[in-house]
Image 1 (cartoon, rainbow, N blue to C red):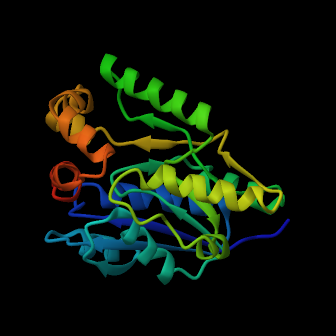
Image 2 (cartoon, rainbow, N blue to C red):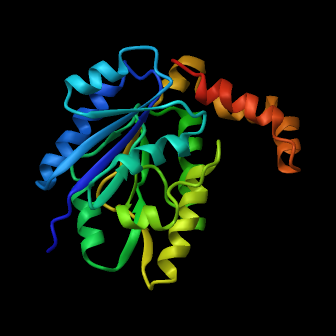
Amino acid sequence: MEKLSVSIVIPAHNEEKYVVRCIRSVKAAAKRYGGEYEIIVVCNRCTDRTAELALINGAKVIYNEDRCIAKVRNAGIAAASGDMILTIDCDNRMTRGTVAEAAHLLSTGRYIGGGAPMRFERYSFPLWLNDLMCRASFGITGLYCGIFWARRETFLAVGGFEELKAMEDAATAKKLKKYGRARGLKYTCLRRNRLINSTRKYDDLGDWLYFKLMVANFGTLVRAAFGDRSGLDALLDRIFYDYNG
């Protein structure tokens, strides 16, 4: 079966606490696969030691200043040379068989790409509720996210990640799914491996974080649904693009 070369793209904003453990998980998965690979850390407005630590641990480092996670990922894809692209956020980890399973699925010729199931690195009642909502959403829509994987030529053909400040993952999954359907290929999810999802925001701000945000910012979310995104963009900056926890 075809042995694909692999580029793993890791967007990072001030991730000195997490970048080494992420890279180590990626290296373990890449070595289990056994093919040629590269790790690309995209430093986004970093003011800490993220770039230094990434370089020390064998990653290629590039820089991006956009306040849009999709544009950060797309910068990494543009710099990639592998046949297959995987993306993972810097505070998360992948399990050891991730690269091998994704490469195998692509090599069968039946799949355009896909995502991965997500599991928190620890659990509590509100985190179980978050987990169950995510599972239900993915199961109903089929728009699996987490770790994205597809051939590089596929990402380039669809224009990369949908360049939105939020919900870019679902929009990108929808785009890949549509592109695959037109070619008789399925968009799928890893079965034997998963994304280990960081709980750092919950550790810092409480396990009910996103439920509280939905209640406290209900008006902002409603206005955004009708086209006024000014309040939403400020909220996204606060909880994602300026967060340094």
